[in-house]
Length: 391
Image 1 (cartoon, one colour):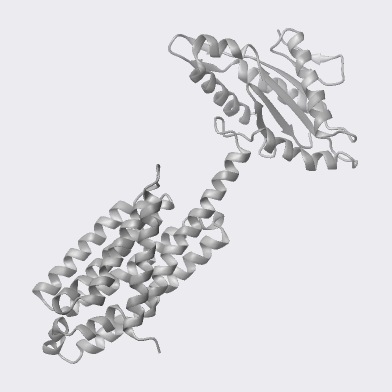
Image 2: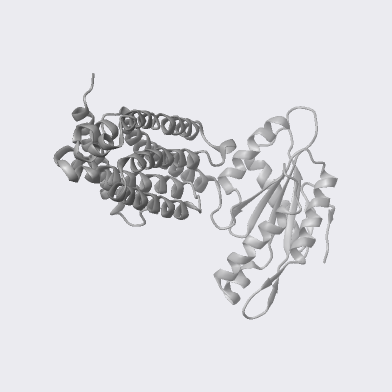
C-alpha cells in the first residue's frame, strides 16, 4: 500500500520537474500564453506540496490554498490553448472561491471550508474536461480520451468529501480540532492517488495536445497558402491525382482552369505589395463564391490560380470560368489613391485519359496564354481554336 509520504514525494518531484521544464520552455521567444499559465500552475503546486511535505502545524493550511491556485492556472492554460474566451471570468470566480474558503476556515469552522475546497478542486478538473470537450465532433482521439479521463477524475475527486462528512458527524468540537491535526489534513489532501493522476493528466495531456496542435499547424502551412488561405501549389497538384486516375474510366468529365491576373505587376509597382496582397485575397474570396463545395481553388504562385471542377463538362466549365471572369472584373479594391479594378485571363481544359499532372497543367497554361494573346480579360479552352473572348 502506498503511504501518504510516498505520494507527497512523487507529487513534489513531479511538479518540480514539470515546472522546471516549462520555465525553460517559456524563456524562448513567442512562448504561448497557455504555456505561461501552465508554468505558474506547476510552480504553485510545487510550493503547495513543499509546504505539505516539510512544514508543520498552521503552515499546512497553505497547502490546499496553493494547490487550488495551481490547479486553477492549469485549467486556465487548457482553456487558453483551446481558445475558450471566457476562461478569465472563470478564473476570477475561482479566486473568489479561494478567498471565501480562507474566510470560512478562519472565522467559522473547517466544515464549510473543507467542503468548498474539495468541491472547488473537482470543479477545476471538470472545467479542464470541459475545455477539452470543445468542438467534440472535430476533436482528435487523443483529445477525446483526455476529456473523458478528466471528467472521470473530477468525479473521483469528490470521494474525499464523504470522509469529511463522516468526520464532521462526530461533532463540532472535534471538527475544529482538524485545524491542529496535520495527519487529518494529509489524509484529506495528500493521501489520495487522484492528485497524482491529475498532475500527470493535466501536465502531459497539455504537452501531447500542444505537440498535436503544432503538427497540425505545420501540415496546414505545408498545404495552404498563408496569404489567401487557399490550397498551395503542392496541395492542389496532389488533389489532381485521384481525378487523373478516374479519367481513365468512362464516366463524367472533370475540368481544370488556370487563372492569371492581368498586369498584376503594375499593381505592385504603382500601389505597393500590401495592395497587391489585398487583391489576391479578394480574388480568392470572390472566386469561391462562384464555385460549388466540391470545387477547389488553389494558388499556384504569384498571381496565378488553378481551379478544379469535378464532374463538369467543358461547356459547363466555360460557363463557370466566364462567370468568375465577370465577378473579378466587377471587383473593386479600395486603396488610398483610388478604386482599383482588376481583370483575369482564364484557360480551361478537360482531364484526358492519358494525362499526367505535367501535361494537364501545361495544356491549361497554353489556353491561358492564348487568352492573354487574344487581348486579356477573356476565357479560352485548351486544344481548340475556338474560345469565349470578351474584350
